[in-house]
Every structure is written in C-alpha cells, then in structure tokens.
Image (cartoon, rainbow, N blue to C red; front, side):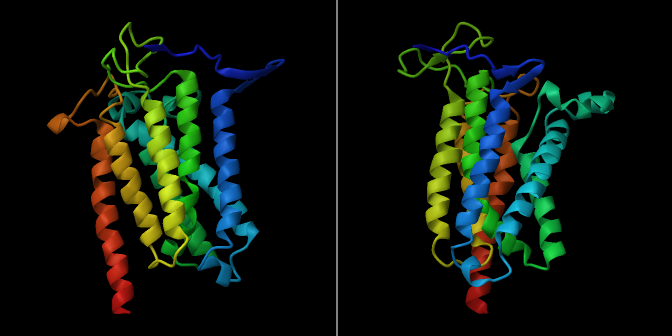
Amino acid sequence: MLIHPQIDPVALQLGPLAVHWYGLTYLAAFALFYWLGTRRLHHLPFSRLSEWTRQDVEDILFLGVLGVVLGGRIGYCLFYKPGYYASHPLEVFAVWQGGMSFHGGMLGVMASMVWFAWSRKRPFLQVMDFVAPCVPTGLAAGRIGNFINGELWGRVADPSLPWAMLFRGAGDVPRHPSQIYQFLMEGILLFVLLWLYARKPRAQGQVAFAFLFGYGVFRFVAEYFREPDAHLGLLSLGMSMGQWLCVPMIVGGAVLWLWCGRRQAAA
C-alpha cells in the first residue's frame, strides 16, 4: 500500500506572495490550450478558412478562462450545495474556499463560445469543433493539481491493490487514487482519441459531440472509483451526482453526433 506524499500546496513563496501548485496547473492548462490551438489552425477545415488566425486562439482562450471560472463556481453552487449557498449568497464569491464543478465550467465555456461565434459571425458548431480537442490536456493538468493537494480521493480499495493509497484526512483505509484514473482517462486517453479523430474531415459538430460523449463515458466510469461528495453521498440507482450529470452528456453527445452525420449526408 502506498502513502500519498504530503506535498506542500505552495510551490513557491515570494515574500507575501504564495504561488500554489493548483494555480500552476491552471496556467499549464491554459498554455497547453494555446499551443494546441495554434496547431489546430493547420488542420482541416481551419487551414482552408482564412478568417481563422492566431488572434482567434488568444480570444477563445481569454473567453474560455472566464467561462471556466464563472461557470465552474456557479455550477458547483447550484449542483452540489444549492441550499447552503441560498442561505449564504455572499460565499458564492469566496472562490478561495474551493468548490468548482467541471460540468458548470463546461456550460460556462459553451456560453462564452456562443458569444465568440456570434461576435465573429461563425457557426457555433465550427467553433466548438475547433476547441474540443484542445480541452482534455487541461483536464489532465487539473487532475494533477487534485492529486498534489490530496483532494477528491477515491473510494475504499482492496489493500492488496498495488497502487492503493492512504490519503491524509481520508482515514486509515486504502483508497483508489481516482485523481490519477481521471488524469489518464479524461485527460490523456480522451486527448489522444479526440486529436486523432479530429485530424480527418468530419461533419460539422461531430468532433465537439465526440468530446461530449467521450468525456461523459470516462467520467461516468471514473466515478465508480471516486468517493462521492460527503454531503450528497450516492443518489438514485446508487449513482453519484457526477454520474447523473454525465448521463445527459452521454445520451446527448451520441444523439447529436448521429444527427450531424445524417444532416451532412442529407445535404
């Protein structure tokens, strides 16, 4: 059995300024998005569209950061602790206390991309096809931050599991390092599959909906190894809140992917 290394969450202390590892993972996520976005400009159909430039990547990144932060925080408050934040509305703004939701962040990014598509007069699905393959590496960086902080640990594991791990604050029982599972599935594996899938011509919208479906499936599976939120526990059908939020992603992603393909065939 392994013991989670007690890594100082502060990576660098410069006088009164503390640079946290979690903040660095966010910076890494944004840097990876920018680098991959510039590579996407050379992929079809964007390489044939003169209106797509490096400036678009920068603008998408800026709007995406706003969407992630605002959507992630609002989503956490609405999905996971609506009663608490209804009674303590000012704490919605206390982001330093933690509490971000991927599903809320995704909705925030989608809203920001609606604005980008409208302001540039470009098809929304084309914009989402551009963005989708650049996202999983950022998710991977975030899961590394979760592991460094020793948070969002997994469910109790069999002590004979070679990589079962003791997390401080999680009792004296071995647990699945679910942050690493999510890093590998939602981050690395999803990135490889989606990047390769996006390299060939696809019906408009299919790359975006492949991401929606793929993330939903990988997150749904990972939730079986991740400890549910203590104040929620398991919900109907023995599923966690994270799994229930993934169900519409899986169903919607599959249905809309098929719809995009049939729409192009009909055209």
